[in-house]
Length: 158
Ligand code: HEC
Image 1 (cartoon, rainbow, N blue to C red):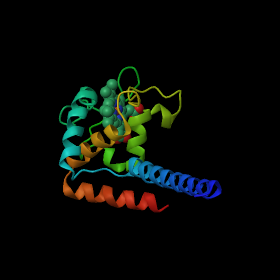
Image 2: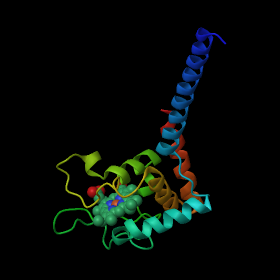
Image 3: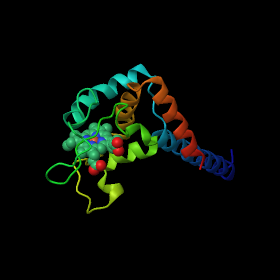
């Protein structure tokens, strides 16, 4: 094989690998950003454990939220709302739930916003955040899950 030939071959291989890399990245970031897996038993059970460890102290072991969660605390902050069907977690699409959990509500409402909901980016990987949210969704009744699916479809069509 001539030197020129093998150089061309290496270049082709390199271009191919780059394209594959970009493609992989596109797929994985999309999956991380939008898909929950409430029907995947393994992911849901991992998420349940993570929920008890990182979220239950405020949102409740049974996702019931803090008592009187709609009334502000004496320090003017909001209590933790429930994640079950009585709360408004299911009113938010996957992308927003992911963002709230990863970055906290300050990242959405601005630095001046006083809140106990901090971001979990230093304790939980993106995959773990997806697992916790998948667990939360797995506890909702079928009707609420369907409504949430439909909302996600609408919001990804934009
Ligand atoms: C230290 C208490 C605390 C912990 C721990 C906590 N949260 Fe929160 N969370 C809150 C509070 C308080 C709010 C409402 C805050 C606000 O709007 O400022 C909230 C709001 C949320 C919301 C928005 C809900 C809605 O109805 O708008 C989501 C989603 C959420 N938390 C997910 C999580 C997840 C997932 C975990 C565990 C990884 C977690 N939180 C851990 C206190 C906490």
